[in-house]
Length: 379
Image 1 (cartoon, rainbow, N blue to C red):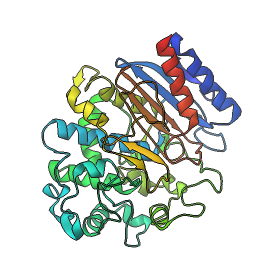
Image 2 (image 1 turned 90 degrees about the horizontal axis):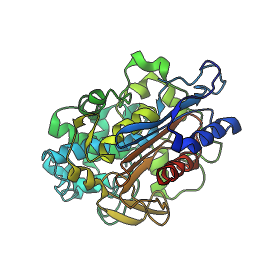
Image 3 (image 1 turned 90 degrees about the vertical axis):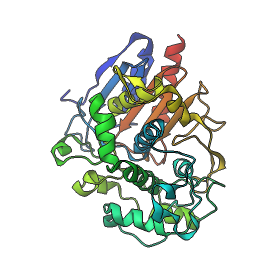
Image 4 (image 1 turned 60 degrees about the vertical axis):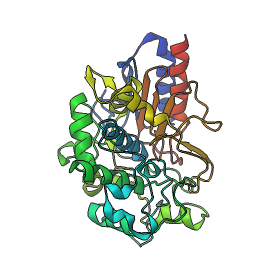
């Protein structure tokens, strides 16, 4: 809609979701956003509206896409789960089996599962790096392979905000000979016709919404921090405006550089929500999907500073994140984007927006609509 109004559809039983979506835009909680959900592989909610820019000159269209920061990690985890299901990747194996250089500096026994659960002790770079370095795959993966862990791997989680994608992505590359972005595109996005990109072609730039930075003082890197957190958030530092550049969009940053919308997030995660099969295509076995539910580590996260509970590449429900069904996995991105996969209800949920909140891993806008989805299922 040219005037920034809301478009899309909602099945009747989920009408409350539309009301909340409309309210978020009406109150200014959102400037432009999309929310979508599938149940049993069928899209039951697909909403978009508002504006793609802060000045409200560009409407948020059906095919508007946006950088979703760490919601990208859910796509990277899916790629690893697919490879594991094919027998090409063993989560219990040392990373060095696939990436021999990684064994340096006491990391010979670090397992792939440690990378998946943020417990490898590589939450940041020990060497000073720049944003330009982040766009240099060989440089950042070589630095991570060479450095010693910050803590004993496997003993605690410490959110690998930027590094996880390079670590898991390099394992995928060593196994398949394809970059993570290429593997994802060829094995997941293209077969589903899903509009999610890890490494966005320049031809799609005009469809990208501008991320609007969070309020001053609430962003990553603001406030007093311990050394570990400061390293993660300030080396190289997070500049939201960088997401508007061709360099950022085109680079493969599998922990935070993905570009998509709610529809593509829900569409892709219908794979995991439905036992490995969606749109008539099988991507992995039901057992392969359920690997994501296996608890890897829980406790106080050294970076996030609060309790965290990680399965294989995803967050798990806990006392701090109580979700209605136990077999649910999720993760969100800096500013508020979110992916939820409920294997019990066979439901996948996606939310992508451009007005950022100060949160690192999703916020209440998406969670409120997700709760309305569960209420609709129960009705």
